[in-house]
Length: 156
Image 1 (spheres, rainbow, N blue to C red):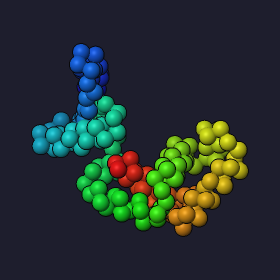
Image 2: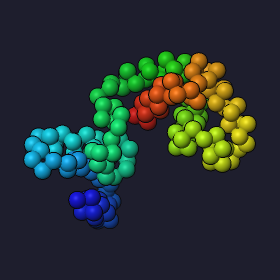
Image 3: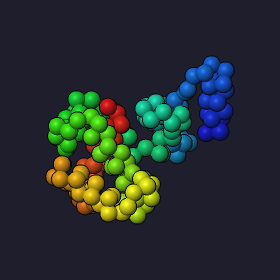
Image 4: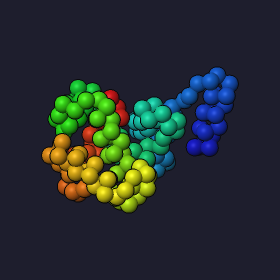
């Protein structure tokens, strides 16, 4: 199914210069109702559209299952509550740092490599982030707060 969807996406892009957002259901149950299949495909398609990733399967979704059901104002309030009155440029820097933190699974050494900076500079940036927000991204109990803020920021 995914191979066919990839082919269609590629053909539409080549012929019409348009990008498609495709969502695929989980395909878990043969006797799943059509209504459930459409629901799953729509959820996946919404994420494909939001992320610009082309094709997304329902099984790939985590918080994205409910992310688009949260209002824009609520997302904005959440990010503002965490980061206060920082300007847009600084907020983007913090979001990029957060994204890299998650993509490196919290490894300071990998973050330093990816950012082309010293490990101590990464620690300094994370300390600054903690100072601004009152929460430390490196603490497991506070990681989810940053993860949600990062996901919300992507939708804003």
